[in-house]
Length: 391
Image 1 (spheres, helix red, strand yellow):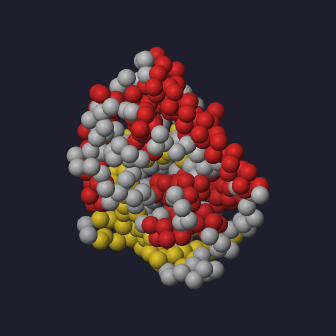
Image 2: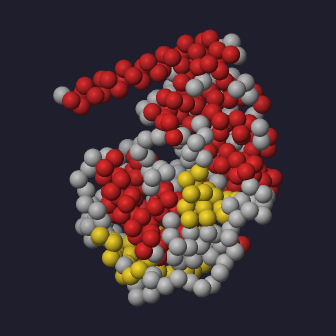
Image 3: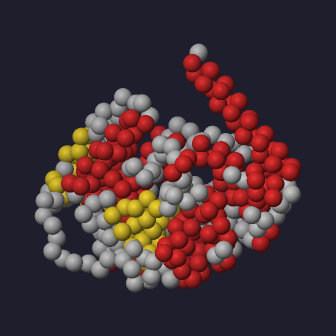
């Protein structure tokens, strides 16, 4: 895979950095991939070769490209990042027991250290879900605003989920009061670095989920190195139940460079502990956005039907707080919703298992029974799947 034609330009009143991606071992057309933001933050965007290296290396590794070749005289990558990407590919090859070759990275490395000092400034990826709200809340409880690890900016990204542009803009409007309350700048970001390979996805966004999430977010973060030197990616799991995943504490920090540290945040907190942090933050609780469904019910931030919505509503019911928010079209959590939960990962099972004593404490024996039922159902499915695979 070749990366060339680095450029910075304005399109439709958005500042954009881009590069052309040319496949060498697959018969696919060349594509310009980009990261863009509004003119307000144009000065903070850079055409950073590290961005496009991160956007392409795990893609090349997964889809059979032999190398990444950066075809530009003045484009230099960070040697720390180069080693980090190689390390992450080795982790993935070990996790998933695959025989793919490690992609050869052919690019000039930056051997000089810049003498230009920039202020220490931390940012985070800010989607409005439980994980990101709890990361921000926890950060505010731990650090003073003057601390260099205190979050100053929230990057909210369009182009890495199925949310359409209208729903994304509604989310930006909805989350603006939360950002103001927390004292952070909300920075809208637009990209196609995932869209341009979605036709290669096999099912259920498995490439994003198991390989690409952390490196894609880190690629976006590196485009903002003139502004940021630390970016948090909120953990999606806790230590006790962590599994191989596309965003993981063993891989995400490897996507750091000399200019930018990537931090996988709050891996010691359980989903239940994170939810309690959000429930106690009133303005965030009333703007909670956990859903990535393409078309949402009018006036709502969540569909109330997908897996993310179901586990969040179940948790809020267990905490006796679902009735205190209007972000879901459903006010009463029932067994019918619970039965729609499709538990596949260790983390998903752990989330529901942790709710059983809470359901019991609020007198919802019906939900205790049906939670145990879906956990048993998932165990049976796992056994049958293993048997089918062995034969």
